[in-house]
Image 1 (cartoon, rainbow, N blue to C red):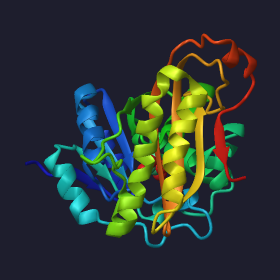
Image 2: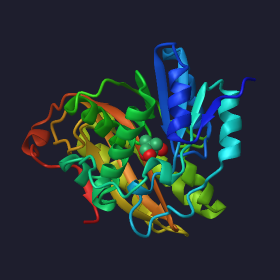
Image 3: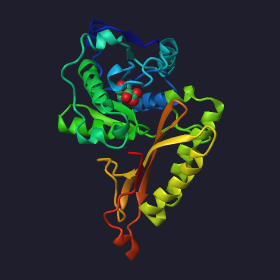
Image 4: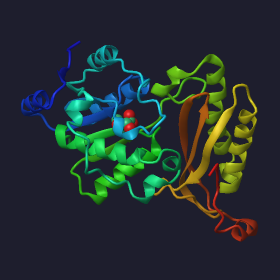
Length: 305
Ligand code: PAF
């Protein structure tokens, strides 16, 4: 097992980067607390690039007031062991003062896409994500960057940013990794008590129920998922639903009743103090009934705002 080169400052990163002649270089941006989902991103990066870099940085810019910035798990020693295990070449693990020597005045705006779905519940979150991702791209200068499908809206927005701003990075998405019972892996799962974890399973169960109804069209998909979430809202502890939406994978706008082709069923909610998100990509068959035609224009989502 070869230990990765660890850079904590810009100077150390620049020196490490100057020593890397191999090409391509794939970056896996993370906030640490690495789990099997992150490891699958690192393995994907290894498949596509000669050099693999991982960044570990809990980005204050993407946390809103009252969110879990202070208690977000910071497990650098274990993360470095995981990176060594996976044969990572370079780890960039800056402190906040290195990443943001002063409060950034100029930031990336996520536009309208950052204000819908997850953005309704986390104002400014996607501006913070896109700003730090751009900085990481500029500092590490990867040819590829690998992100999880788990954060589907984040991934769609990063793809959009790369296109809109002509950033010279190829974006690669990786399937969500789940526990055997369906819970999507997340660094925030470690906040959950046993009882909370049982309620949290309703998110993936709702997505599964929605997927089973896919042949009946968008309305049935949302109805089936909603039924599972309604039950979870009465559980102890209850799920407090933020949103359930069936959206276009690229724009994250709600699909209509006649939508055919790719869509993503996205869900988010709170169990106790923990905010959890999950999603499932679906392929909707072409709508065939008059009833569906009559419903054209309807949007299929449930939101609490
Ligand atoms: O997905 C994450 O862990 C973060 O949002 C990211 C992309 C590393 C930016 O801080």
